[in-house]
Amino acid sequence: MALQLFNTLSGKVEKFHPLEDNLVRMYACGPTVYDYGHIGNFRTFVAVDVLRRFLKQSGYQLKHVMNITDVEDKIIRNAARDGVTVQEYTRKYTDAFLEDSDALNIQHPELLAKATEHIQEMAHFIADLRDKGYAYQTDDGSYYFRIAKFPEYGKLSKKDFEGMTDGARVDVDEYEKDNARDFALWKAPKPGEASWDTEIGPGRPGWHIECSQMSMKYLGDSFDIHCGGEDLIFPHHENEIAQSEALTGKPFVKVWVHSRFLLVEGEKMAKSAGNFFTVRDLVLMGHKPSSIRFLLMSVPYRKQLNFTFDGLTQAANSVERLRNFKRRLETSQFPAGSNPAIVELAERASTEMRTAMEDDLNTARALGAVFDLVRDANAAADNGQVHQDNVPKLLQVLNQFEEIFAVLKDDDAAKVRATVEWAKTEGKADKISAAAAELAKAASLSDEDVEKLVAEHSQARKTRDFARSDAIRNQLADNGIILENTKEGVRWKHK
Ligand code: AMP
Ligand code: ZN
Image (cartoon, rainbow, N blue to C red; front, side, top):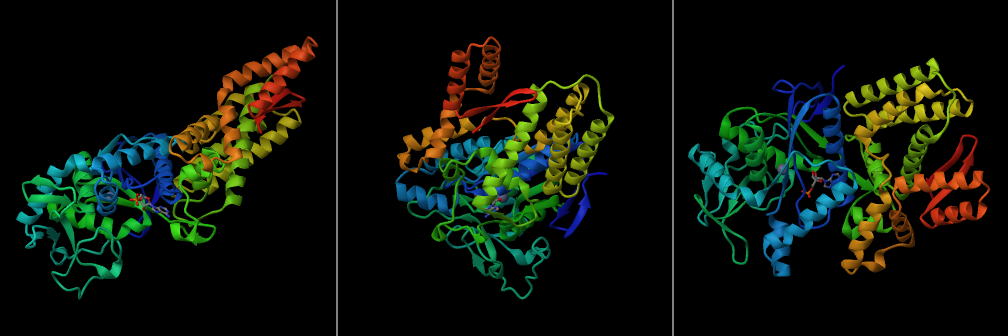
């Protein structure tokens, strides 16, 4: 079997093969850094991360580029409102985006490209389009793409644009499908707006040109995968295809991958509806980054994900169950030897996980496989049927899982603590819930510290030094850690 991906361009699930040998060249539209990222944005970024991680696990070499949109209508408006430069305004939100990505264990792409660092090259791209007759200048010095000259316009969004008035124009960056017009490649300077001097005159780029120019600069005229949320299919990606293919005459991207929008409690997320959450909002409410990541991954990227607080609690329980299983394997005593039934169980889970991911990244099915394994192996361990030599094999399956899902490492407390500290410096201390404060407290002990204390606790009990063992138990409790006495010895977990 090989990876199969749904390609928006063909409208079909296709077997994936890179254009060139073993190298996958992939571009993902990044954030517009005008505010903190919301959980909808991060649904898409986590989906791209899952794809990225699975490609690497499958043995491909990867060159993954992501843009940072740091000049655009909303940014210009907000920077002007706050009386700061575009660069000053966007630096803060670019840093925040990377911090939130780290909190959610989203791997950094091989290259992050900022739009403002490519303005001259974008102007040159537009000059070439003009020389080929695909771009024209208006009286004010702006440039537009002439879509009537690109008959394939609409092939990605499957929209028939015939009958559209030639020369009708739109100059905002985002617009609706029924409003397909010649779109802005370059916007003439306006008072109070950032502007650059270039070979095509002064001004600033429209939103769409940056992704054509930067993706082709770093990945070549034709590359393998282009990702983004479903809202980008039109106009953004349709316009990217028009710009790039008009310039080169070659197919721009082989596979277009789009993730479906996230809903919150069944509704479209909107500030006005009061159901709009950033990653930071949720962490300050006391939710762990690993629960958020888990929930965002639990529904396959092409299915509607309904984000609910119940779902978030269930996600936290699921993560805890997996971590407890891993801890049990690492810290318990098992009888010597190997049980072939457990080997078979582990192999079945491993194959099923891989098959699920090859099936258009069916994360729900992959999770099903790992939870079946946890249930069956836990039951076997309770009956003394898991043996010492089975442990590495079981841990190997968990490792295969972790390479993609990345929720087993227990570093939530430190991340929550960082967010709590950030809230204090931003004057948002009133947003820190008791649950978040409690979680942050646990950050003072690393897993290693806890292991040491647990060992010391067991030793103290053996030597009947109950004063010491109680003191350790209390110290751990203060740090949000509880001890459980089991047949296999003392186990610990987070409260
Ligand atoms: P933006 O910062 O608005 O440019 O968006 C960054 C990414 O988030 C894009 O790929 C969008 O398609 C995606 N996105 C925005 N809102 C949602 C949502 N509610 N659900 C899933 N993805 C979204
Ligand atoms: Zn883009």
